Structures are given as C-alpha cells and as structure tokens.
Image 1: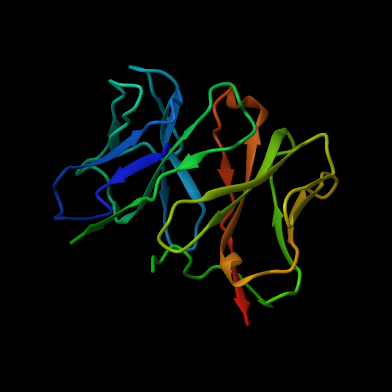
Image 2 (image 1 turned 90 degrees about the vertical axis):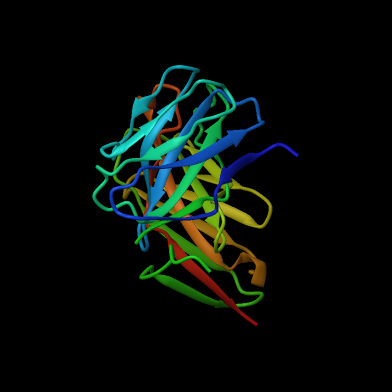
Length: 114
Length: 115
C-alpha cells in the first residue's frame, strides 16, 4: 500500500546528541514536510521540500537540519542546538501543485530527551 | 496513548448526536481551509476542505461551514460514532504558499463520544 513510513516510532536521546528521524514515501509526491507537535498545540512547520536537493526553512527550523537526496526520502536531524527537542514529529507529503491543503501524514516519531 | 491532546478544549457528545467543532482563523487571504482528524498515537488524517469562495461543503457524514465575515470555520459531524473520538484540527492554506501546502494549524479540539 502507498503511504508514508516514519521510523523509529519512539526514540530516546541524551542531551548533546544528534538524532535523525527517517521519513520515506512511496506516493510519488514531490513535496515533503516536517512538522513538530507539542501537547495542547497545533502542528508547526520545521522544513519543507518540493524537489530533490532543495528545501526551505519553515517557522521553527532552528536546531534542525534536513536533506533531500532522493524523492522518496526526507530525513530530519534534531541537533544538539535544539533547546527543547522533546516532541512528536510528523512527516507529510503532498501532490505537487494541488494547493488545497491535503497532506498525507506518517504515524509520527516521538522523541524524548533524557 | 500519546500526550498530544493534553489541555485541549473537549467536546463531549452522546453517540448518535450531531457534533459541531468550531475554529477561528486569522488570515483573510487564505485560499483553502481544511479539517484533519488525529487519533491517539497516529498522524493527522485529511477529512474535508473548503475553498474560500464557498460557504458550505458536504462530505460523508461531515459538513464544513465557512463564515468569512467573522473568520469562522466549523465542522459538523452527523450521527457521531465512537470511532469519531479524536482530536480535530482546522488548518488554513494561505494564498502566498506558492504551491506548497504550508498550512497554519489551529490548536485542536478533542471530541469524546460517549455511548
């Protein structure tokens, strides 16, 4: 079945460590996104990408980095510079040019900093 | 379950009743308005969208109403079922997104359906 796969589902990290969250899609979507979700809040955009080797900062990009070497993959690295990294991270994709707002989300990755 | 729904406003309804979830948006220039459903521990799922030039749109058991005068969006769910229990997010897609879906999400409302 087509969809978005995020891994790992749960991740624990010590302070000062970088971690990378995986996101893979087989929907043949050009656009991919990373969102952060905190309790009691809506989703906030970290990074987005429309094509391979191109990506743009979202509203809360500080302390995060991404790469887009393949159309199917958009990994997110949470660096030690991110001051409050504990959160639920969601990857999404969308059909290019369809600006209606329909995003296809993965199941999320929950990162906890110990 | 996940803790993403902590401290959210909660709407409690009886199974079989109709539910109305409300949302206020901020950007008059937004082109599309969207509702998402998020079940515990999962990613949000698209429910329905409405373009800014429309006032009402119906789907299967759901209706979205848009009042641009007061910047208000609502989601009506008919004959609410236990499977409708989730957190519901409204989102807006600004005209200046440039083809991306750079959505602006609301904080969410938890819907609790009781038998």
